[in-house]
Length: 268
Image (cartoon, rainbow, N blue to C red; front, side, top):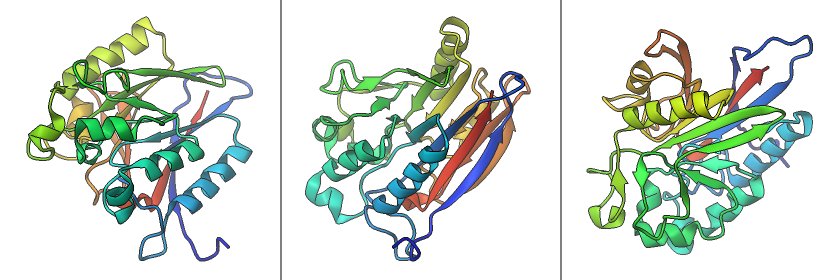
């Protein structure tokens, strides 16, 4: 059944947080820019059915798995045009996603459409630099998230792209955008210092390049351990970039249509 499908994933080994005679393992799985790719691509890659199979297979051999997405889970196939994101949300529920951040295409049906789409979501939606207080999304978006897995305390920040030129103004109405660098420094410091998180992860839909891209973000921030990115589509890889303090931060991103699943292994 599965022989005709191929799903590529990359393994990253993150530096151990603490030393132990018998280290435990946290596996972080990450997707980005799935764009309603319910069925496999023309290259017979990906698709929801095989993604769930692969995720379930990883969970069977790993006790602590964190499943995240960096945005644009919708728009790109007729499934979204017909069902408005309900198929994607139900599938993400079934796959057991812990959290996602918002991409620009999540707003293609406006704020009301996004609220309707997320109504039955069983995963958290983290977007730290979008203030939705005065919209119907007020109770749906989290500024940050803390998850505990296997005794490890993990803080998650979500970053959305500047809406100018990528989101229609009417579709973003009522939401206030904030600078992602200032936002990251604020929440990362709070998560590490005040909340005592062992690991801080940024889910980013900023793209890899540009003045506000992930590579620029790392150089101007601190207290972040891992950035799981999206939006660029043609960037694929694992990048190690020095942050404001000169410490190395890993940035991971894959191409569009969820043909790949990144896998980060943390020993602690």
